[in-house]
Length: 559
Figure: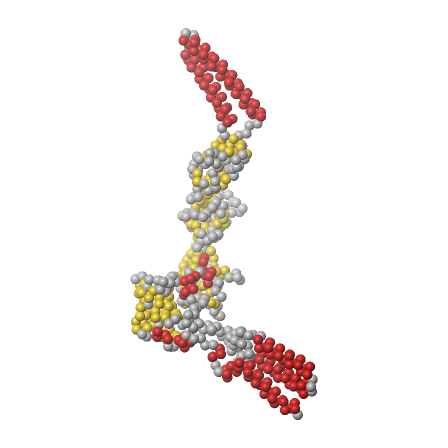
C-alpha cells in the first residue's frame, strides 16, 4: 500500500521534470527550433540598391544614417567626386562625401519600421542620372535590438521545441526513480544509492552535453546598430560581398562581348641576346690571365667597345726560351757587323770609293735588324689584351687572376640589355604577317616582332626568332617564356582577361559573374589560350554579362 500511494507522486514528479527541462532549456544557450533540412535565411543590415547604364548605387542603413556607395556600373570603379541628392520622406537632402570614398545621408525617418521609396539624383563627370530604390526597415533594425531565441515566443512555443534527448532522459529518470523507491521500501539502501548515482550522472551528462550550443542554422540578423556586414558564401553557392569589401579587395568588372578571334598556339621559348648587340671574349692563344688596371669588370658593369677586360700572357717552355735567346744572339751579332760596315762606308763614301746608295742600303738593313730584335723582346714581355667586341654590360664572367685560359673558353659575355630576342620552337609554319607575344612566368607580357625561321629542324621543330618590342626591364638571357602566336584560323567566342579565370581544387575553371551590386555568381567555363593577356571562353558565358576582371582570386577565398 505504501508503494502504491507513492506511484502517483512519482509519476507527477516525472511529468514535472519533463516540463521543467523542456521549458527552461536544459541545454543552456541552445535552440533546437530549426528542423533539419529547413531552408537557411541570412539577414544583413537594411540596404537597397539601384543601377543604370552608367552608375551602380548601394545604400546601407547604419547608425541612423544611409551610407551610400557609388560605382561605375561597367568597371565597378568607385566614384568619389559625385553630387548625390536624395528624395526622402523628409524632403530633398544632399548627401555629403566622406573621406573613405562613400557618401553619408542622415536618415531620422528610418527610426520607424516600414518601406521607404527613395530617389537618387547623381551627377558625376558631366553625366547625370536618376536612380530609384525602396528601403525596407524591419522592426528589429528600427529599434536597434536583436531578438534572442528566449524572447521569440512563449512557453507554448518553447514546449513545442522540446529536445528529444530531454524526453528520453526524463523517461529513464522516471523508471530509475520507481526502482529506487521500491528498493527503499524493502530497506535495500546500497542498491538504491547506486541507482541514484547513475540517475544523477545521466541527468548531468544530458543537461551539459551541448551547453552553449546553437542548433539553429539561421545566423543572427545583423540589425544591431554598429554591426557591419561580412562577405560570405550563401547556401546557393553565390557570394555576398559588401561594397566596402569590394573596394578593399579592388574588385573590377567588365561587360563581355562575342567576336571573332584568331586561334593562338603556344610555343616554348627562351630569351636570347641580339646577335648584333652581343659578343664573346676569348683568348686567341692559351695563356695565363691577369687583370687590367682597376681589376676585372664585375657582372653587370657597363663597358664600351674596345675596353680592355683582361690580359693573357702566353707561357714559354724551356726549348722556346732557348730558341729565342739563340735568335736574339744572332740578331745582336748581325747588328754589330752592320754597324761596323756603316762606319767604314761613311769614310769611304766621303772619298768616293763607296756610293751613297750603298751606304743608305746598309743603314736600312741595320734598321730592319734592330726592329726584329725589338719585336722579340716585346713578344716575350707583353701579354695579349682581351677587349670588348661591343658595348653593353658584362653578363657572364669566368676570369680569375692566374687562370690558364684556353682558346675555346668563353671568358666574358657582353650583352646590350635593351636589345633582346626570343627563340621559340614551332611545329607549325609561321609567317611574318602573324602577330605574337611572349608571357613570362611572372605574368609579364612582351610584344614580339617576327625576325625569321630556321630551315633545318631541331628536335623535329623549327627554331623561330622574334624581337622583343618595347620595355625589356626585368628580363635576362636564358629566361624561359611562353610564346603565343596567332594563326590564320579564326574562332568565335568571348575574350576575357586571364586574371578572370580561377582554377578550383577539382581542376575546373571558374569565372565570377557580377549578378547584382553585391552578389557574385561563379560560372564554370571552358577556355582556350588567345594571347598573353586574354583567353577565349568557348562555353560557360554569354555576351552582355558583367564578369570580374580583377580580384577573382580573392573572391574565390570567400567562405
